[in-house]
Image (cartoon, rainbow, N blue to C red):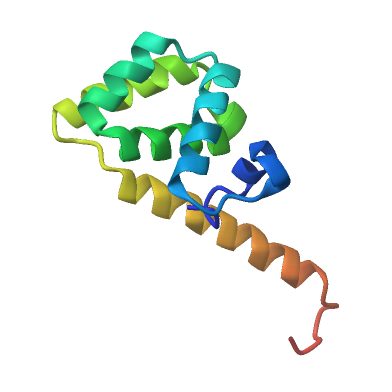
Length: 117
């Protein structure tokens, strides 16, 4: 999770997350920053389960400005789960791949063309 969503540690005390309880606290904070209502959060916990709801909030935050309404998006994902069409894994993998591509691009820009890596 931390590799796929590195910005989450910016909101953690001491800028580190070592345990699930710390991640959950950060997710609660992010929920308020994102403007997600308590009712949308409670429904997400009920439908997704607490762990998946926490992970989903963190991933929504990581997606950033590409999501116009975080609360609406969470409600949409919650409904998709009810319909059997949402799982955390694929979304997490997509974010991880995005991070890996960014790291690869950054590493490539540090080497002059033709240089051996």
